[in-house]
Image (cartoon, rainbow, N blue to C red; front, side, top):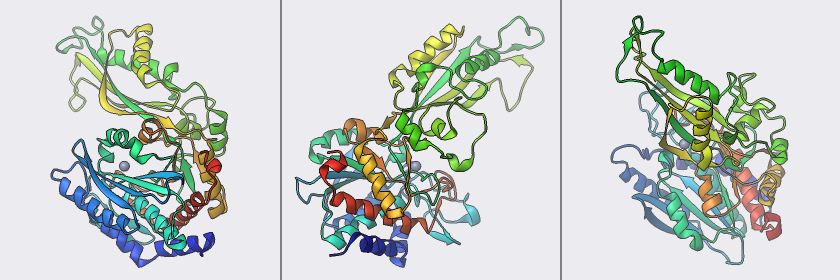
Length: 457
Ligand SMILES: [Zn+2]
């Protein structure tokens, strides 16, 4: 029987082979932009393609539909007494943005430029899916079995808010009967740093408006007598955040950073080092501000006609504000706390409305046994400790797995901050694939031989 090191070596070699590159190119070749008119054929064809691949590994595959969206549920049950790990991937992408890529590259093709591989979805999330499938295949080939039960759920609507995923997981909860959640999406801290994250910040978008009157008034004839909604709203916004970006509404922050999270983030530089000195909550490091705290941003702010200013006091002003928040902030209290705050600051006439952009914060504790198990496994394979982020700064449907299904959830991302996901020129360094496949092969291998107690079960 193959040993762990041999399996890892073999898996990494596969991820560096022409066959892996061809498999990845095939996935990128499906134009799975879920927002495109008539996308449903491409979404279904992509699911057909990966269904065949996963079925070949001995998974029973079910195609499901929820809220009009297709899903794949693949299950490999080796022994009901073994731990059951739920994995996840999404096959949809953001739009291709044809014509805006460097050298006019085709987004729906894998193109090699030096050490980089370009293609829509290579980072988010097709390449990450293929890494994990390649690692699962290697463990099955090397050992004849995983040593655990596995479910993989694949959705085709993540980029438009995961419609149906929550309802489907609620319905399947007892069928799945999973113990642990392990998946891959999002970026590593940096390209060559093994990384895991344990949750995601939530997000809520709010529109703040002041309506003073029905039309503008001459700024000379009325200026000094009439309130200016633009100025008023600027002051209202300034009461929400300090001039250095500190959120001033206590209910919008978690209040403190847990000691385990603080220890995990010690010494880390977030955002690939693109950090403005002196910005954000005082007393916290930049890494804590992104991965363990809240931030409030003005996304847009208008009064009058910016494209053609006229000499008038504008009748109304509007600002679109986004709060990103971590576990510890009560999402049901975000709007009431803002209302109380504005009223107390003299801005009772600021109207608040919410938009449909909302994600819930969720997180598995940094010191959960499964998180520690994954960290140990990654360290054994990489020969260096992985970075452990309490929360991804951005959002993922993680709450469905932690809250709806009640699972400890660990994400091992295989992308990097410079990958240009959601923009033209999405790419990954080719070298990240063998590295990531090695980490995942070691991890699946270790789960298959673990004591339940080591997994926190
Ligand atoms: Zn995305």
